[in-house]
Length: 183
Image 1: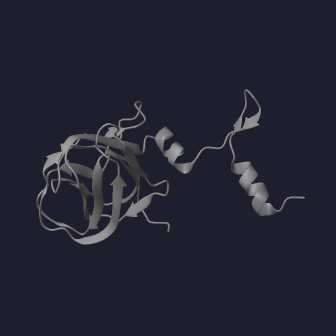
Image 2: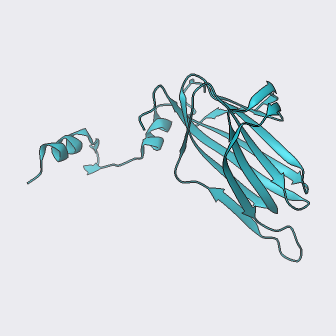
Image 3: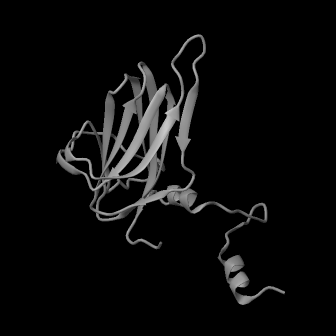
């Protein structure tokens, strides 16, 4: 026997009529169907020791739910700062709606090479432990399966710092935005 809560859950599920089976999709996947899931991709071809590549995520009036992924060949430090003081946003990066049938655009903006007078508060520090040494190259990646929720109207810096010469980085941001925080 199922209780009322379980019955309400079952009633809320969508049944695939043609095949008569229940289909479960994640909330993030559903956001793609609704045209609310966005992505940004950047490739850094050469980052040397103590060189940095900096990105500025500027949230709008909505909460930003994001999964950031970085892969590297070479030792790289990755940091996220919250509440940065930005004097020049930098160059805007194209953000794509993952539903190509949707005309919705992201409220958040992402820029490369911003000018900051204060990085803000360090909230994440990770190390990509790849290697550029020959004869073999080793790659490493950071993929957080759990999304982070970023505050509205806030500037965030993503800073990649080379810890050896000739590092290569593949950087992705996948995100959706919501009106209120339900945490």
